[in-house]
Length: 517
Image (cartoon, helix red, strand yellow):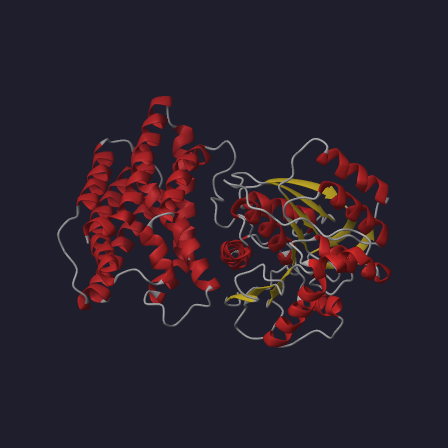
């Protein structure tokens, strides 16, 4: 990691600099990530946020507690720092038993705690160390004793990535907090040069609609000295724990992919989506937490039938994200003929899907469910009509029934002919669920890119933010879950089979433009 100059800086401070952060040949499918940080009883920041963030990115989270806080979404009331010797015992108990792929360091509180962490890092030398220099909370509350600032500066060269907010960046660079992006980048360069490590400069506290982040390294470790990832500000009051969540996500993904730029480009859209969906949590009267699991199902409780179905859906969702059609749609390089084919087939599909939903309405056991499916059927016809009126009216696209569209509609018609309301509801659910999940991710990526006006599919990507469809998806999941719990074993098996087939056809439908346009 450090050059000879950086090595000298660290040696002057009394300890050797860390080894480089290497990438394993295969990376870690499930990175083992340790959070060394304070606790937040409200669950939005500290180790509670870290563990959620690590899990959200497929890691196995562990935690060593540095400090106990009394806080909520409105602010920090008190901080208690246990003896540093007890922290050392926690750290040793973990590292003597478990291989650690990445470490995220957050709130340290005081000098003795910092020295304990430093001694442990010198001995264990984890492959990925992300240090979030928690000095000032988003609420403005001070979280590090002033006497410990120098000790914290001495810890910085032992990290592979430092993730300060703008106030902390200014403190560490020895200047005043910057109000411009260029000023913040310059302080990032100063801190990177002084420590020999990579600094993540975050634009979240700047004014304006733009919200970029940048990786800064003056030692030649990145492709260029400054790597900027643009983004758009998310309008929300809920930002509690964003710094904790970002830094632990960076540690987890870096342990898996081994490339800081790729890591940031994966994490930033996720965090934008977590901010965008934060209002759904409705936690606290102040600055609430972000929604760490916005990109996953949230309506299927553990042990529910819907949760069992989700294990089927998430495999297909992973396949969908890997399709060239989805990647090219997100980046804006998708050929227009493929998009036109997709929309034309979608219009054909929606016509058939609406009839199947009407059948679900006829079979539904309650008036509420009858009305839900009937409204959904009507909305399908309205969307089909709108597609023909707008995009398809001005762009040529084949109007013949495609092979995948035919297979999908035939499958749904067969489910409706089975006479089982539960089986039919399970069969139509993936069109809600997978589309909503994929759409949320695409929309978050579009937001993180700054909603570029030049994106040829910008208007389409904006439609994925429709909260009405998200609510309809939650209703459909709840209906299927109730039906599954009430069904016989044989009927539940038939529901799972129908659901699995629909999931597979959803994936094939997204891939059809590449094959048939």
